[in-house]
Structure formats: structure tokens, C-alpha cells
Image 1 (spheres, rainbow, N blue to C red):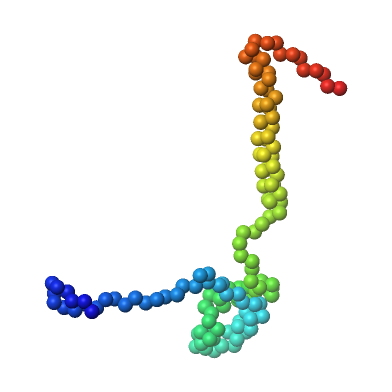
Image 2: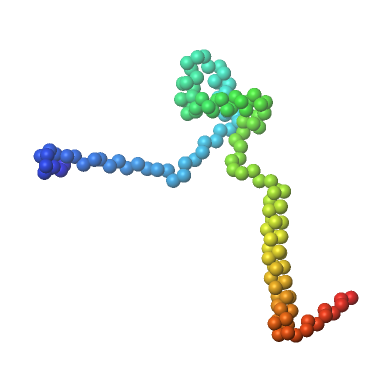
Length: 137
């Protein structure tokens, strides 16, 4: 406790609570069988029991909405968790690799052309005639 010299009142210091933060939260994954079982239970519920089911299972009503939509699509595979992330097109990867290779070869060609043209430019600076290139057979 601290005393305030101006007010004459005692002031308590605020309490500091220690909270632990999980380094990386884990996303929940539900199997297709679990989803179907919960949907069947939810379909059997009378009004007022659905909330208790959701609380007991730790689910949200949006889970049921999404799972019902997937079930109506008629595929058990639709209920399986989907892999997250960017879809990779093998043709796009090959195209990107070929573009990188093309850019690299273009830069290499420019360097070689500079090396080939250097003697010609030197002869022009020295006012020397440029010899004709020998014919290739």
C-alpha cells in the first residue's frame, strides 16, 4: 500500500496477473465419421437439445451448417478435412521454372555478346581495319 502525500489516502498497487500464451495454437480437425455422427445426433435432437449437444461437443452452429452443406453435396469425401494453403499447378511451376531459365540465359547471352564485341570496339578506337570473319564450313 502506498500513501498519497496530496490526498492522504492509501492507494493500492494494481495486481499483475500472469497469463500464459500458447506458442502456436493447433487447428482442430474432425474426421468424416465424427462429422456424420454429430449430424445424425443433431438431426434427432428436439428443439432445445441442439444447444446442449453443441456445448457438449465444443462445436459452433456454423460447424453444423457447413457440414450439412457438405453432406447435401452427397460426398463422404466432402466431409474430410481439406488441405489448407495455395493450390499448386504443375504446369504453372514448369512455366515459372522455364521463365527463370530463359531470363538467366538471356543475361548470359548479353554478357557473351559484350565479350565478343570488345575486340571490334578496340579496333575501331585504334583506327584499325576490322578483318573479315573467316567463313565456317
